[in-house]
Length: 344
Image 1: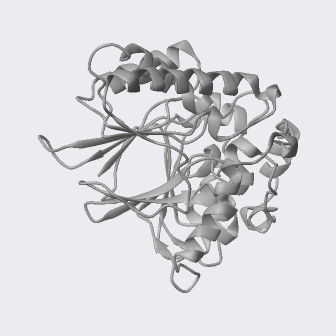
Image 2 (image 1 turned 60 degrees about the horizontal axis):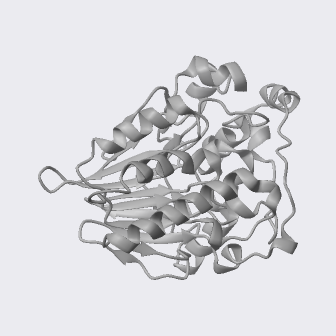
């Protein structure tokens, strides 16, 4: 199993390859933002695939949906090369009209898929949530960890518009703190009605070829933590994960110590070019939690993978890790990584 981390600027776009030709299978997760340069490159890569076994839109934020809309538009006529779609679209989560950009994009994709569905046979699973049983596909097993049904059905009246408050001043302050100090910062569990779009994000594990991959989308870590607990995982019995796609591009609000305590993982992926607008991703605090977590086996190396080069990311975030910190915490940092085999 291989994970291809497409360059999606501040967004997500992944191709998961399972098996060998001629029996190779492809899962596409998200499609990046509405930057023309970015969309063209992502759709070009998707068009190289002979077919797509499963396409997943984790949630309908602009930085996840745009490339998928363009791909579906290009294939709305003729044979539709996608066998199954999980599309977390507008109708799944009612939101305030202030989020018009994402809402409009989600509605566009929803209508496109409905139109294609009138002419072609493909499976479109609605309302994917973490109460569903494991999906046993022919080539892999998938466990849904997020969202909850409540997150999917949150009412418009309960939605509180959240504006990103991450400022460059806080990034500067974090750079002056040690990783040990940052790792002890407490994350507050989000309440129903807050950050509704990310709370509705699909998160799941994929098991194939003896490996397990955790795809977090932009999911709330508390939702995933709660689901893993119900599945029997704990600090004493953590879920062994060969690789984890870190939630929300490494935002400090989407990784918590409680989630890390029920995972056994040494390989982490960050999809970001440093952020956009008011976002500065990844947060140094997130790296601190991964490297300084009390349950971590300190004698083992932790590998951090970024799909953009260090210079591009750190021109926004500042220095993420010093050489001394990497050595102290047994950390390998890999920049500009596009293809990652899970048998590292």
